[in-house]
Image (tube, rainbow, N blue to C red; front, top):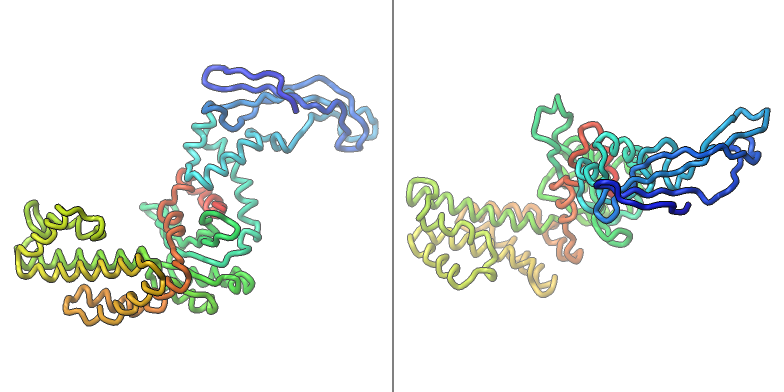
Length: 399
């Protein structure tokens, strides 16, 4: 192909192209065809310099003079430019899929950049996504597997289908630089995850050496049942989140006990609620002074102070210089927190003790994290705007 003309028409860039091949064979019999003029076909191309682009392909028309051939006339085709009867160029389709995969774009946003409609774009990329979803090779080479739930919508399931979904994400770093979504299946339960692992087959399951998850026992049971040789790792973010939530529970309880109402402006504990969620090394001297003043405002506030220190110790075990030191601190906290006289902290300690093996596995797997899974399954932005008819095709192919 060669470029004949390039110009700007309104808000769009227009490119005229022609084929360089002077001869071609009939697709029916292979005999050299005779030229019969040209026909111009306009295709939607990927954006150029921030403008929607149109590719005007001046196609040759050909006639087959072989009398026994069933093909009378045909026009030239080039799958590298566009699929037969396609509305988008191959380059535009690939560009749109890349934006879905890596830039968390929506179909509506991409259609706006291409200068076309939602239905036009989706009708062209959906077959490509469906073909990729049916390719079993996308499950090859997974050695770190993450799982998380996703709430697809907040309306009546009878109108929009399943509401709660389970997403499986490849967190391996050998073949792919970022996390990639493997599959998204309806339902949020250990049975759903177990059935999905069973369907993948023994070769896939034997290749998984690390399985990360949130503190949900259903997923843990599925991992124990189907991934016996894999190391189960509880996500560090959720461990710290549990500790921070325990501090908030203690603060609210002490607030009610001392003042008889929920936090209000000017209340000592209410004024430091945000500082209690921050790491102590990030607080300024003024914030530290405010924190100590709030703790000293009432003798019952000592429970909040102790809970805050416990939560900070939980956070610190993931910020040690070496994993060995972090593991020792984690083992110590798991042993002592269940004995704390503060009920919320004791409950936190019992939770960590229940998940002890999965918590300590973080330090044995060089800090395996479920963060990539959270980024994909919680945001869901890569498949937003696709509509209820095509969500499964998109989410199955963020690879």
